[in-house]
Amino acid sequence: MCVLISSSQLEAQQQDSLITTHQTITLNDILKLASKNSLDVFKAKRKYGVNYWQFRSFKSSLLPKIDFETRPFTYNRALIERYDSELNIDVFRQQQTINSFANLSLSQNIAATGTRLFINSSFNRLENFGNFQTESYNATPVRIGLSQPIMAFNPFKWQQKTAPIEFQKAKQDFLYELQTINLKSVDLFFKWALASKKVEIAQENKISAEKLFNIGKKRYDLIAIERDELLNLELDVYNANTNLTQNLQTLQKTEAELKLFLRDKLPQKAVPELPELITNLSIDLNKAIALAYENNPDILDLKLRKIEALRDLDKAIKDNRFDLSLNASYGLNQQANTFVDAYGRFLDQQMVSIQLNVPVLDWGERKGKIKTAKMNKDVVDIELQQNEDSYKQDVTLNVLDFNLQKELVDGALRTRDIAKESYTLTEKRFLSGSVDFLSLTASRKAWQQANENYIRALESYWKIYYKVQQLTLYNFIKDTPLIQDFETILEN
Image (tube, rainbow, N blue to C red; front, side, top):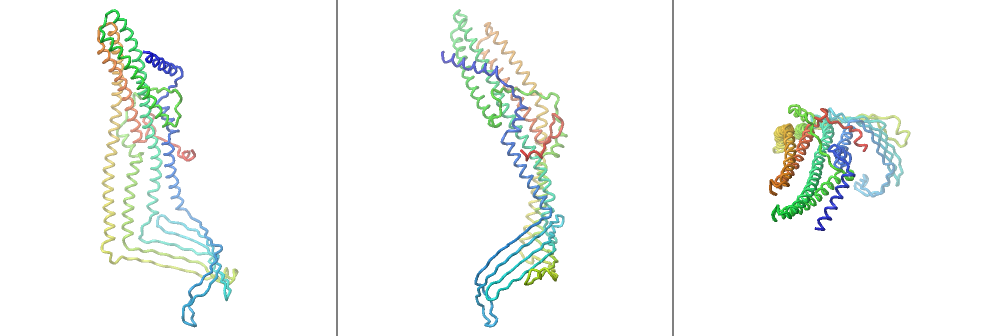
């Protein structure tokens, strides 16, 4: 009995401390803390950053590039094979050279046609040592040219189609991830709230059980109740203490899990405050489906996969038929024994080439690759249609569930109030001797279960809401699209 009293005093002190110093935390408070401090947010920002810089790299690939290449000093001393015309034999001669080279080039890719334009300027100095020491210069002050694949696969053309969609999808993926964080926050908040409510009920049960046991002892002394009824009341006290200890442990675990998720940003001695319903909120199904097709990254992913399937088919067709390309350049060039002469009296340097590669006999290899690409495209088209139908069904079911969930929450709230009132009346009747202990226990359990059912119904309401918000990327409470300042994401 002393242990029981000590435990009661300790729990009472904990409760008194909670009452005097607690800070109420709402669901919105948890959502705000999670959006700033959880590791999931930092991970989502980095994933967006990867896609941002990939898009920047693609845009840069379409701009002119300037490259400078140089080998200022190359010394070579070796025996090399030479042909001796006098003896009509190959002989080895020792060769020593110093070579200096530099090249400055400007190039530009034309995405629409796959053309590569370039202009460059180069300089080369070669000095030979040995029996005869010579020095020569080779200068190409300017050379202009192009490389044009004809009827070939053009990767830049397809990148211009896919890159903007991929970048837009990256933005929507970030917003989608924020809603995933919201859903996780809702789950952890209501676990915490339910555990806190169970502790509150367990404390009330403990106080009630001790009060009834004390009354029972007096009535037993007056021979108003039997011994077995007194034992049941005493057992109820021990059960209430055990239940309180277990619920306190669960509360500590759920609070620790929430603190870990928020990276220890949850205020000390915080107490959860259950959120209110948005009483007049009803989501229009057609509007939700339209918003989902407009905003959701999964829909953009479907569009992207369609384009990629067409790209792969185009590549398979063009890579597996004749290959025709044109290369041309024009420049000025001179070679001389002095630097000054190398940059005087320039000679024209011209080059035009047409390359054609035609498969004659490959035993159906290329045809097989094209057929494979076409079949893969057909498979992708079917999968996309299936995914689109499944996605539409997902949106529909969640919207319908949300619009019905309010009635379930209202029913659970009314049931909780009725169960509480019923338990209060049953307790009074038990004290007056009108009902037995089993009726009192059943009424208490019904009240406890009604409390839990209400919290779970409220949890389902907010989980479904944020799931719909995730699928549509639309804030139905404020009736506005979800927005984000993407310029500040990479700064943090």
